[in-house]
Image (tube, rainbow, N blue to C red):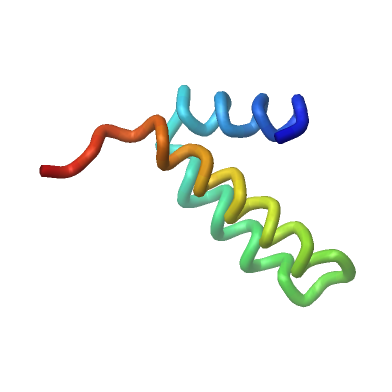
Length: 57
């Protein structure tokens, strides 16, 4: 991942309450130019974030 991606993942890890709004914004902007690429980046960030979350039993 690039440094920007790392910074976004760290920001989301530090403030997990921000995750739903981050994802919602990506879906809201999906129809705009570049929206599909932006959504894929958001999903990549959330996927990377998953490795930081506590594992369920």
